[in-house]
Length: 156
Image (cartoon, rainbow, N blue to C red; front, top):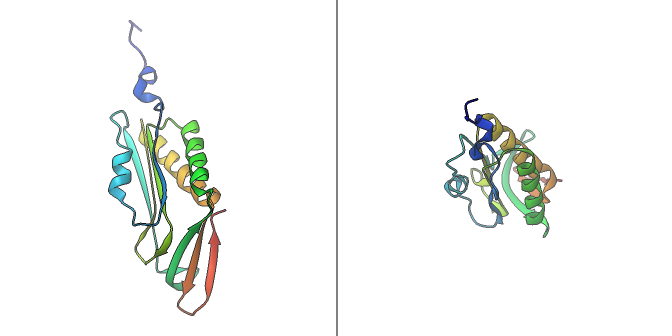
């Protein structure tokens, strides 16, 4: 090919050497801007951001209050989930933060973002990140419904 390289040979098409930029479980309000800034990368053509918010209902019942708690291993498990994503996708940058404590309807519960060379990879990697976080990281949701009943929902 006359000394030209294919697009896949460009370093920007590969995963970054250290793509995990921000991982945290916090008891303070989350920032979409902080997570978005953390995954900025000049080689990324696609950045996908997911924001999970507290809704006012679940399973047909009105939610009055909601709180998240976590196991002491939650941040280590979050890192394990993130490392699995970066091992399987060409991630340029990744960030994930989850809230614990008492939250109100409309509050941000989780914000994750992934940047990859192309949009399809970014969507797939971000979907894998949020799905695995919800299924594997030991964070539990305690909901109080308007009828006075309560429910615990486990992440794993």
